[in-house]
Image (tube, rainbow, N blue to C red; front, side):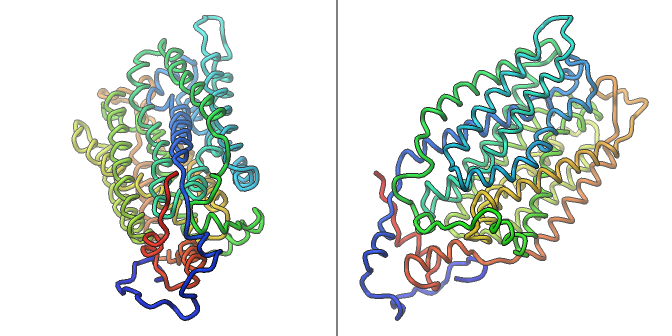
Amino acid sequence: MENHGEPSSENHTEVPAEVPTSPNPELKKLLDFKVYRWRWFVLLVLCLVNCSNATIWLTFAPVADQSAQYLKVSLEQINWLSLVFMVVAIPLSFGTTWMLDTLGLRFTLILGSWLNMLGALLRFLGTPVTNGFTIQYPVVMLGQTLGALAQPLIIFTPTKLAALWFPDHQRATANMIASMSNPLGVLLANIVSPKMAETSEQIPTLLLTYAVPTCIICFLATVGIRSSAPPTPPSASAELSSSEPFVQGVKLLLKNKSYLVLLLSFGSGIAVFTCFSTLLEQILCVQGYNNNFAGLCGALFIVSGIVGAGVLGLYVDKTKKFVEALKINMSFTALAGIAFSVVSLMREQKVAVAAVCAAFGFFGFSIYPVAMELSVECTYPVGEATSAGLIFISGQVQSVLYIILLQALTKRIADSPLATCGDVVLSWKVPMMVMAGLCSVFTCCFVIFFHTRYRRLEAEAAATYGTRDGNSSSATERAPSVET
């Protein structure tokens, strides 16, 4: 196999000398992989809970002014309702990676769905329509914290589920579908919140709307997910799965230079997108754009991202060109980030702002599932939850730092007649330039310094065919899955 996973142009017609002409019983067992239709239900449940958790995360960001008025707090405190997800997830993520690899996917996903439901219900109970009630914000924050506890349990799961339930030629697509359900939830939050909470008095109705689906999803997860893995493995890597112990796996990751580059660079990308999703309404309102337009931009950002992820996921599943696809898309993402930092400061440029948001999402969101799959490929046999989980932790740590930094760089504007921000109007010029600069620097680092072998694909080829010369495309053709 080539270092960058490029399919060989040569057709290998001869059987290598060390491989017997007829497979022995062990090899025959490896070649007869089965996949089960139930994998799609497990994927559906993961998508639903992931989407729901994202709506809990960003419920208040698109209606920050109305939320601040209803809860009688500042905009900075409203931002902390989103920021708590990053703060809580950082220490919890280490336990989550251990939990996924040790206790299994079923236990982790069901626990996440219960925490997600309890957090959503508590937020609604914390906002009764009574004049004398004075502890709304702490109760809502507690509900957000429960949702934050659920996030790493949910968001670490796609790579594990793809590895355990799906064959090698469907892994990137399954990871893409599961991962993109999170931005789909962000999309719903950007559409539903502005429409349902046009005034501060409508905040309780909004929270109830988000709470009801969590109960249904929790029921589906608890009753419907019956095992962590299928009765028989779908691929050679699943059959021969022998992940390193958690602590040993972390040590191996910290010694892997390629992984460290991915950890820092893609973690920065996660942070930039978190800042964008959290602060979009506050950035655009300064130039006179209302909440509905900010919600439209957020929707374009997500929809174009899901389309891009679908296209890129299918392409990577077919070609296995993880590195090439990631480097190209990250470069275009950096250019789109620079463009947004400019057009977001212009008035009456709705078409330009919307177009840049769509481009930012198309190139940026599409890299997430590919990067998660690449983290597994370059670190195998370290557990999927560990390699993908540390990248998520990196993104959360950098998200907290970025949001605090960007908020600190804002300046209050004394007079802004077109602003729709309420009582406090802040200038985001310097923070936007800083965000674009950070995105560009880490993209350049990734493009220049990241190089790796595809270790999992190599291991599958070696395990199945007894050679490292078989390329990934032939592995897909010669190891058919059987639907049962």
